[in-house]
Amino acid sequence: MTSQRHTYRVDDDVLLDAARSCVLAIGVGRTTLTEVARRAQVSRMTLYRRFPDVRSLIAALMTREFGGLLAEISASLTAPAARERLVTGLTTGIRVLVDNPIMRAALDLEPELILPYVVQRLGSTQRLTEQFIADQLKAGHQDGSIRVADVPTQSRAVLLVIQSFVLSLRPATSDVDKDALLTELGTMLHGALEHR
Image (cartoon, rainbow, N blue to C red; front, side):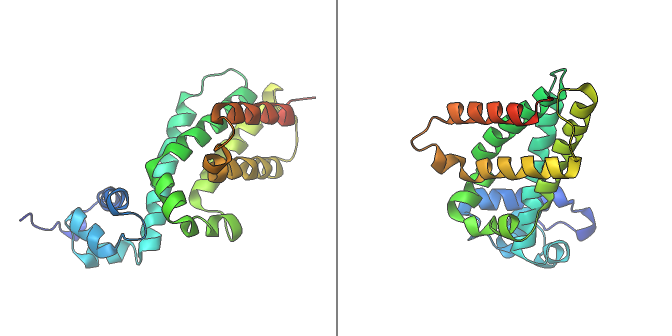
Protein backbone atom coordinates (compact mmCIF):
# COMPACT_ATOMS: atom_id res chain seq x y z
CA MET A 1 0.00 0.00 0.00
CA THR A 2 1.33 3.46 -0.90
CA SER A 3 1.91 5.72 2.07
CA GLN A 4 0.07 8.99 2.30
CA ARG A 5 1.89 12.20 1.40
CA HIS A 6 2.77 14.69 4.10
CA THR A 7 0.79 17.95 4.06
CA TYR A 8 3.78 20.18 3.42
CA ARG A 9 4.76 18.18 0.33
CA VAL A 10 1.41 18.25 -1.40
CA ASP A 11 0.92 20.73 -4.20
CA ASP A 12 -2.59 21.91 -5.09
CA ASP A 13 -2.13 20.38 -8.54
CA VAL A 14 -1.86 16.91 -6.97
CA LEU A 15 -5.22 17.45 -5.26
CA LEU A 16 -6.81 18.92 -8.37
CA ASP A 17 -5.45 16.09 -10.53
CA ALA A 18 -7.08 13.63 -8.13
CA ALA A 19 -10.33 15.59 -8.26
CA ARG A 20 -10.23 15.59 -12.07
CA SER A 21 -9.67 11.85 -12.14
CA CYS A 22 -12.55 11.36 -9.74
CA VAL A 23 -14.97 13.56 -11.69
CA LEU A 24 -14.17 11.79 -14.95
CA ALA A 25 -14.47 8.35 -13.36
CA ILE A 26 -17.63 8.71 -11.27
CA GLY A 27 -19.10 12.14 -12.03
CA VAL A 28 -19.33 15.41 -10.15
CA GLY A 29 -22.28 14.36 -7.99
CA ARG A 30 -20.56 11.25 -6.66
CA THR A 31 -17.20 12.89 -6.06
CA THR A 32 -16.42 13.18 -2.36
CA LEU A 33 -13.50 14.68 -0.48
CA THR A 34 -12.81 11.23 0.95
CA GLU A 35 -12.48 9.72 -2.52
CA VAL A 36 -10.32 12.59 -3.77
CA ALA A 37 -8.05 12.27 -0.73
CA ARG A 38 -7.73 8.53 -1.40
CA ARG A 39 -6.79 9.13 -5.04
CA ALA A 40 -4.31 11.86 -4.08
CA GLN A 41 -2.85 9.61 -1.35
CA VAL A 42 -3.29 12.26 1.33
CA SER A 43 -5.23 12.37 4.56
CA ARG A 44 -8.74 13.80 4.51
CA MET A 45 -7.57 16.57 6.85
CA THR A 46 -4.90 17.62 4.35
CA LEU A 47 -7.60 18.05 1.72
CA TYR A 48 -10.07 19.72 4.12
CA ARG A 49 -7.45 22.34 5.03
CA ARG A 50 -7.22 23.40 1.38
CA PHE A 51 -10.82 22.82 0.30
CA PRO A 52 -13.56 22.86 2.95
CA ASP A 53 -16.13 21.17 0.70
CA VAL A 54 -16.54 19.45 -2.65
CA ARG A 55 -18.03 22.57 -4.25
CA SER A 56 -14.93 24.66 -3.54
CA LEU A 57 -12.71 21.85 -4.83
CA ILE A 58 -14.69 21.50 -8.06
CA ALA A 59 -14.69 25.30 -8.51
CA ALA A 60 -10.88 25.32 -8.18
CA LEU A 61 -10.63 22.43 -10.63
CA MET A 62 -12.79 24.25 -13.18
CA THR A 63 -10.77 27.45 -12.78
CA ARG A 64 -7.53 25.57 -13.39
CA GLU A 65 -8.96 23.56 -16.28
CA PHE A 66 -10.62 26.40 -18.14
CA GLY A 67 -7.96 28.99 -17.28
CA GLY A 68 -5.36 26.68 -18.80
CA LEU A 69 -7.41 26.29 -21.97
CA LEU A 70 -7.82 30.06 -22.26
CA ALA A 71 -4.06 30.59 -21.84
CA GLU A 72 -3.32 28.05 -24.60
CA ILE A 73 -5.82 29.67 -26.96
CA SER A 74 -4.46 33.16 -26.23
CA ALA A 75 -0.91 32.03 -26.94
CA SER A 76 -1.96 30.54 -30.30
CA LEU A 77 -3.49 33.74 -31.73
CA THR A 78 -1.31 35.34 -34.39
CA ALA A 79 -3.60 37.53 -36.50
CA PRO A 80 -2.27 41.10 -36.85
CA ALA A 81 -5.62 42.78 -36.09
CA ALA A 82 -7.05 42.58 -32.58
CA ARG A 83 -10.63 42.07 -33.80
CA GLU A 84 -9.58 38.96 -35.71
CA ARG A 85 -7.66 37.66 -32.67
CA LEU A 86 -10.63 38.30 -30.42
CA VAL A 87 -13.24 36.65 -32.65
CA THR A 88 -10.99 33.68 -33.44
CA GLY A 89 -10.10 33.27 -29.78
CA LEU A 90 -13.71 33.36 -28.67
CA THR A 91 -15.09 30.97 -31.28
CA THR A 92 -12.17 28.59 -30.70
CA GLY A 93 -12.68 28.88 -26.96
CA ILE A 94 -16.36 28.00 -27.22
CA ARG A 95 -15.54 24.93 -29.31
CA VAL A 96 -12.81 23.77 -26.91
CA LEU A 97 -14.87 24.40 -23.76
CA VAL A 98 -17.94 22.59 -25.06
CA ASP A 99 -15.78 19.56 -25.89
CA ASN A 100 -13.86 19.62 -22.59
CA PRO A 101 -14.66 16.51 -20.50
CA ILE A 102 -14.96 18.47 -17.24
CA MET A 103 -17.38 20.97 -18.78
CA ARG A 104 -19.34 18.12 -20.37
CA ALA A 105 -19.57 16.33 -17.03
CA ALA A 106 -20.83 19.50 -15.36
CA LEU A 107 -23.35 20.46 -18.05
CA ASP A 108 -24.63 16.96 -18.74
CA LEU A 109 -24.76 15.57 -15.22
CA GLU A 110 -24.64 18.48 -12.77
CA PRO A 111 -25.98 21.64 -14.46
CA GLU A 112 -26.88 23.08 -11.07
CA LEU A 113 -23.14 23.39 -10.45
CA ILE A 114 -22.97 25.97 -13.25
CA LEU A 115 -26.21 27.81 -12.37
CA PRO A 116 -24.75 30.14 -9.69
CA TYR A 117 -22.29 31.49 -12.29
CA VAL A 118 -25.21 32.37 -14.54
CA VAL A 119 -27.72 33.87 -12.10
CA GLN A 120 -25.79 34.90 -8.98
CA ARG A 121 -22.17 35.88 -9.62
CA LEU A 122 -19.29 35.82 -12.07
CA GLY A 123 -16.68 33.17 -11.34
CA SER A 124 -12.92 33.13 -11.77
CA THR A 125 -13.05 31.63 -15.24
CA GLN A 126 -15.57 34.23 -16.40
CA ARG A 127 -13.31 36.97 -15.02
CA LEU A 128 -10.29 35.51 -16.85
CA THR A 129 -12.28 35.36 -20.08
CA GLU A 130 -13.49 38.91 -19.58
CA GLN A 131 -9.91 40.08 -19.06
CA PHE A 132 -8.87 38.41 -22.33
CA ILE A 133 -11.78 40.16 -24.08
CA ALA A 134 -10.92 43.52 -22.51
CA ASP A 135 -7.24 43.23 -23.51
CA GLN A 136 -8.17 42.52 -27.12
CA LEU A 137 -10.76 45.31 -27.14
CA LYS A 138 -8.16 47.82 -25.94
CA ALA A 139 -5.72 46.58 -28.60
CA GLY A 140 -8.47 46.85 -31.21
CA HIS A 141 -9.29 50.40 -30.16
CA GLN A 142 -5.62 51.25 -30.68
CA ASP A 143 -5.16 49.47 -34.03
CA GLY A 144 -8.50 50.74 -35.35
CA SER A 145 -10.03 47.29 -35.91
CA ILE A 146 -12.63 47.62 -33.11
CA ARG A 147 -15.02 50.52 -32.63
CA VAL A 148 -14.24 52.54 -29.53
CA ALA A 149 -16.61 52.09 -26.60
CA ASP A 150 -16.41 51.79 -22.82
CA VAL A 151 -14.21 48.71 -22.34
CA PRO A 152 -15.89 47.27 -19.19
CA THR A 153 -19.34 47.56 -20.79
CA GLN A 154 -18.20 46.25 -24.16
CA SER A 155 -16.31 43.31 -22.66
CA ARG A 156 -19.22 42.35 -20.38
CA ALA A 157 -21.64 42.38 -23.33
CA VAL A 158 -19.33 40.12 -25.34
CA LEU A 159 -18.86 37.80 -22.34
CA LEU A 160 -22.61 37.37 -21.95
CA VAL A 161 -23.02 36.49 -25.63
CA ILE A 162 -20.28 33.86 -25.67
CA GLN A 163 -21.36 32.46 -22.30
CA SER A 164 -24.74 31.58 -23.77
CA PHE A 165 -22.98 29.71 -26.58
CA VAL A 166 -20.84 27.70 -24.13
CA LEU A 167 -23.85 26.72 -22.05
CA SER A 168 -26.29 26.03 -24.88
CA LEU A 169 -24.25 24.96 -27.91
CA ARG A 170 -24.80 21.23 -27.52
CA PRO A 171 -28.61 21.33 -27.37
CA ALA A 172 -28.68 24.20 -29.89
CA THR A 173 -26.84 22.08 -32.47
CA SER A 174 -29.20 19.11 -32.32
CA ASP A 175 -30.79 20.39 -35.55
CA VAL A 176 -28.36 23.13 -36.66
CA ASP A 177 -24.79 22.50 -37.85
CA LYS A 178 -22.28 23.44 -35.14
CA ASP A 179 -19.65 24.80 -37.54
CA ALA A 180 -22.24 26.92 -39.32
CA LEU A 181 -23.53 28.28 -36.02
CA LEU A 182 -20.06 29.23 -34.80
CA THR A 183 -19.28 30.81 -38.18
CA GLU A 184 -22.46 32.88 -37.82
CA LEU A 185 -21.38 33.91 -34.32
CA GLY A 186 -18.04 35.03 -35.74
CA THR A 187 -19.81 37.08 -38.40
CA MET A 188 -22.05 38.67 -35.77
CA LEU A 189 -19.10 39.53 -33.51
CA HIS A 190 -17.12 41.02 -36.41
CA GLY A 191 -20.13 43.13 -37.36
CA ALA A 192 -20.83 44.27 -33.82
CA LEU A 193 -17.20 45.17 -33.11
CA GLU A 194 -16.14 46.60 -36.46
CA HIS A 195 -14.77 50.12 -36.41
CA ARG A 196 -17.19 52.44 -38.21
